Length: 508
Image 1 (cartoon, helix red, strand yellow):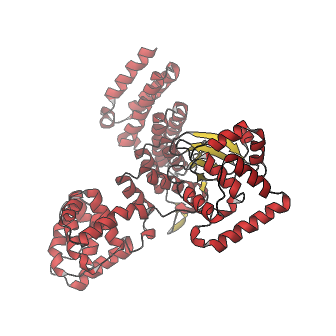
Image 2: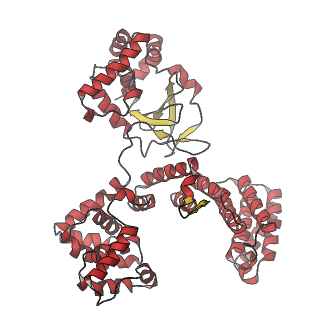
Image 3: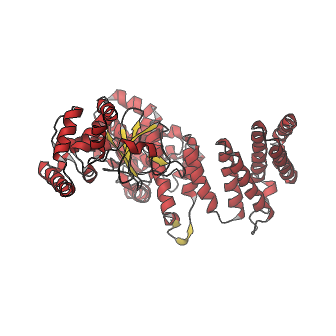
């Protein structure tokens, strides 16, 4: 569809006023913007075209789709164009009440919901004559509520991953309006399920191609985890042999478990050969029965590992399983949005980090993992969100210094030089007054080298940014830290120290 109707509204004040009231698509409110600064997680452009009387805003995205954001922190695509959106808000003025409806609910339920909402609207003001006038002027056909609800649902399902809205300052994602969409594991497993079906059909080309491709091999093994068939033993052996090329992976352990669950003692030599591939594999498959063990012993080992690590329900898998496999398949936007929502959940409820065995202490490793994941995806703002909270939750002086130093590096790489300087000041404060003995040997280990190196790199960044006074101050601090390091720790950064000093002299 084109945006001809929007052009007509902008040309005809009478039509614009009808759209604003009673259909709550007010072009004049576009000048006020949204209730807060927002941006798309994808980085795409947003144009404000209208608002409503609840503080909601209609944005046009790069492809013409219209994203509606309410004032309570929820957003969703409601049309493929402004004209389609106008047709929706005029044809279904109570559309906000129908975002959970589906054509599968049936015509009777949909019509009853629409009738109830529109009867309530009619108690306050008329809509029928004005709707007919607007439809005629804008050239919209009269569509059934069932058809329009179906179009609304299809639009809402397109929201993720391309049109997720973020608070521009905090970086947290808006909730999703309407249906949640499929869980991440469904699109991630789709290709693996297709490959598993081809392997089961005896497609020898597929046997070769899947086994040779590490990503396809991993996803196919995951598909086999949740769709276990008696006739899979030979293909599982085939995938297990080839997965050893990747050394110790979760999928290698999974393949060994799936083979072991069959209880065929003839597989014990193969399993031993796999275990002895390298040191990491030997550790990862520790406890495996040796050749000569009974079928019961083999199955008992495999069953225990299956119950503790794998299982048959994909929703029980850690979210990192699916985000890693999504990234491997190029589904980076899906992975990133899932990770953003994971981080949002931790910000909203830090009790998620409590250790089950020690509820008064926190396991902050998920935060550092999220920071690394976002950095690998090239999303420094989200990496900073995760690392900042991670640093704030550290208890020992060592952990605080290490976390703040990593935070400073991310801030420097994001161009936030004053914030990076503050983070390194906090690192020096931890070194000066640690409050515990965790930092007693920092001068002899990699942490000391890491801290000195980040001071020099920030000094270079300050010099390159034309801030010579700050660069000189940081060079002094960096040299002081270097002077405290052991000879071995200092050797690796002397060249960086000399290059930094030369650069500072240049800007002076």
